[in-house]
Image (cartoon, rainbow, N blue to C red; front, side, top):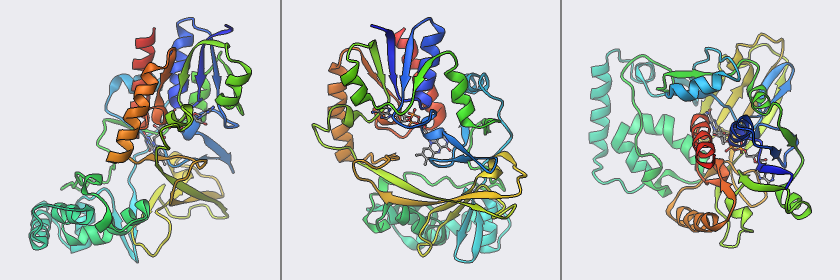
Length: 365
Ligand SMILES: Cc1cc2nc3c(=O)[nH]c(=O)nc-3n(C[C@H](O)[C@H](O)[C@H](O)COP(=O)(O)OP(=O)(O)OC[C@H]3O[C@@H](n4cnc5c(N)ncnc54)[C@H](O)[C@@H]3O)c2cc1C
């Protein structure tokens, strides 16, 4: 055995795991089938701008331990995520807060906003929501639902809100202060120098091979490592023998524009159904960029098929049951640890991925 650990996937989970194992003297090899490291947090340099190739990523956490851990690898800037929503020719602040309500209803005080929502919720008259539309109407009333939730959600899921289960939106956070900060977390920011540099530092001193697919590599090198950390898709690992787990996918249309500032904000959501994309990201604003040009990405939500890039797991009853079966197979697999968003078939924010990798490394060691 040439290595103690073969780590499949150079994303955040694989990189934290590799870093921890390497720090404790284990010999690791990291492989990734893509032609770059950093997985979905990879940033591509276009016109001197860090372009979030697999979707906009904002680091946020309330866990000081995780924040301090990440700060070993980069200093973070003071970016605060404050998306703007465009509904037809109207503009609103997100998340739903007093700025949103003031614009929508011409009101000023929290009490006026609460009264308006309570009146619309009462008008909807829904006691037991049977679908996502009824759930929203019973939480925030008709105006917020129609203008800010309906079109966006229908584009995201490719289905009418009446045909979506209510559990997708359990709560709709409503803030009765003039506060546009999307996250409630104590710590937030973008790493200065970009995410790829963070992962590069995590992997310092560790052998990494990109353009290397695990399944082919394993055939050629069956005994290369004592143990495997697998952060790819759990169903693919088992040859889809129980069926494929489903995902929602996203398509990005990225364009360089010959202007300094296109939309004045990093994240703009398009909440009416007529606009085919869900969001436009202007990447330079994550880092307060002053470049002459700008780069934008339009995001289109799409169905997923085997072979496409998987983004969001569909954690409905059918897929959760299927994952539970794969998890049993995984538990019986000797010397393999499954982790990360694909290995655990779970949507994880970055701080949760770091936490999970640190805990798994601790358990292994
Ligand atoms: C659109 C979008 C936006 C997001 N925004 C945020 C955000 O703002 N803030 C936040 O905290 N989190 C965000 N996240 C979550 C974040 O992306 C994840 O927490 C994180 O990227 C997961 O890291 P990972 O290592 O588990 O997976 P990945 O980054 O996907 O890494 C897995 C790696 O394994 C490789 N791999 C897979 N199979 C094989 C194989 N057979 N052989 C070799 N290599 C293989 C892949 O190529 C990939 O590089 C977002 C997620 C999405 C989808």
